[in-house]
Length: 361
Image: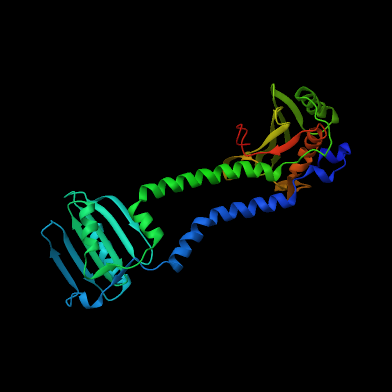
């Protein structure tokens, strides 16, 4: 199935695509924002000092000890042959203990906090290499006081991220949520900035009604798609670039591919926000039974190319042969370029977007 744009004789223009520099900048900055939290964690692990250190001379000679104090707290010290053995020992204890409000801070040391669901007491397990120290007390404040007064391990340095996750976990989670919303908002706004196509300098801007009339006039070019007005400021262009049906010896089938552009005109900004939607349907029946599949995609594409073909077993000239059921090729720019040309030559900006929500496009 060939393109009707070529048949209509439309000439491609160099100014009908997004600027490569903007596209590259968008992906570099977006990738950097995603990597930033991991980079901070890596720097913390690399440069920050260990928040606790072990005093070898204070370790129990037997490899374990349990000490109770007058404030109701108790300290359990375990010394194992390796870091993995100490980790396994702590995991075994945690697995056998009913817990609630569990949290764990990882770094050069590991600190797990929880409440014993049976007794309601606050607990913490601090693991440093092959040494694990468990503290249990009536509440978290008592646990922290006991951790600060231990003889086998003492607080040594300041690890900002470790202390932040341990002491202000709720605030950290809130901050992560805010940062995620910031990245989402940035992606929506910056993607439209990267993909937008501005009108040539000095192009006079038409009114919204005049631009809408130009969009509808594209139906007269004889292209394999059509434009329709959905609302006062919303138009839709749809191209069914594959609608294949076949009946072969092994069964019958159908495949349909449709690409839709929804355009919202914002006259106050002289801007057309555009969201692309692609739908695909495959269904049929054959020797193996019935089959069907549906796919749907919505958003924006910077560059895309889609092509495909289907073959099957057919009976030709008295024998079974492999025959072609369908073949298609689709480049979204072939559908988009006439729309872009109508928009920018009207003095408006053509802005592909991930959403048509005002303020986020």
